[in-house]
Length: 231
Image (cartoon, rainbow, N blue to C red; front, side, top):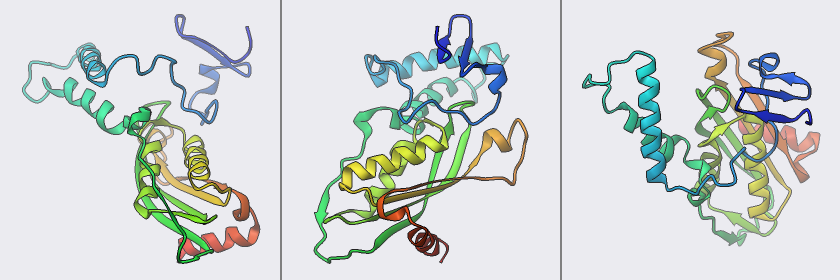
């Protein structure tokens, strides 16, 4: 068996000769694509919500919560609805935003920056929130995209269990494909509650990741971009 193996039956895993215990809380991801089963969409969203509600009710019961209490008895269904329709809706390709491009009739050939896009994601290691801002930039290759669509692309990839490095690259790669250009940049500045609310419990730290493609991958353009963002 290779070093990149998963065995869920005995809850063991090794990655480059490190076990889950060895890895601990390290910031780890295994590729650009969100790990999904081949049959992830074999059942409908409604059935998924029904099954999640049953399973979450069991979790609450194991924790000792009184599910007959008026405040708690609706929680399993609320959580299931939230998972499928809201915070993890980006897992379903059917929810990917439809993007229309327009001719760059203004002949604007400098960088366009959409900054401070607020997003809420969830850490795939502990399923607790990642809260941050994304800054997205591109240089037109002849087509332009509606500003709100930049926000929607960020939200689509954020609304799934995530690792920040993967989120950064997924947004960048999708924008490159949509816009037909490598001249794309993405910077994400985020706070991870798996760091601040548990584990090391560091409330002051934040994580910054970036992607600089094409014309953006020069010291001059990187400086210009950061000047836009910090202005």
